[in-house]
Image (tube, rainbow, N blue to C red; front, side, top):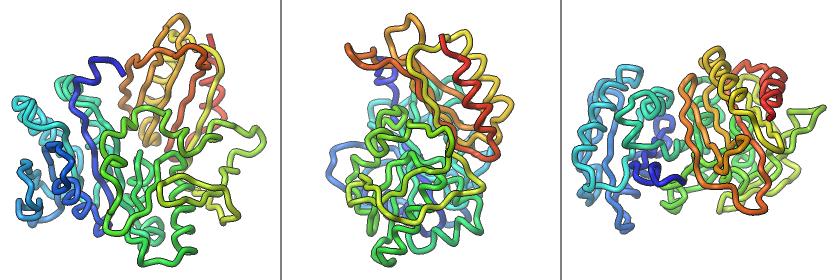
Length: 346
């Protein structure tokens, strides 16, 4: 990572449908003896909101954005609160933003791309989605927000696993994988995951994806829907197994890679044009690319039309220089995206 990005305050966006267990996770984060200090920004739907009693035994500061359902109006609130926090830099190690259960995470995530001051001071570390093992399959059918929350996630906690059978759990994980094959998956009861699996993930870096899906960049020319069946053990690693695989008609994930270098004068205009034209349909994008003549890896991530990228660590001696990109969204032209990307070769 660059020194500049190490100086930035990491921000975790915590999302999940109503009742999935976000507040349980938040309370665990705030009450465990990890020695870190978190500033918490909460946006709750309706009048109740979260109060300091809910933040058990914690001396963290809780800010409330009680303007009802989250939408673009929240961005002004969020920017104002984060700018206020930055004046107290040194009082906390990281920021957690808990969104309302009805929220599309996009406006919150986008805040860390659009406002120059916020972008200079804070970096989006990861979007963490808590999913209810018992009810998620039904929510995916009747609530588009639930599907967006899964698609946006870098880390997904499949919570309340004690309420479902092993077969039901495998089915719900297969449905999640059909929407987002690249997020890190953890099974939990009462959100009992290791905190380090949730915070400081640097999910900005695609290398983490390769931990869980070493073959995800292996593109089969004749069949892009083959995406392997998965079974997961407790620590989030997967095994291939004879599980039913779902293909989500509404949501796509497209991965492409190119060995060797890209031409920045081709790639930058292409990615900017793609996100401007198709941005509403692209929920998340991320990638690591090798630019011709540049000793550093260029890492980018995006939310809809917003893109943020920077050179990070140098390519290691012997490391294969290659470029990898991922897009998750709706109604995307896979062939055009793949061809456009490959045309950026140096």
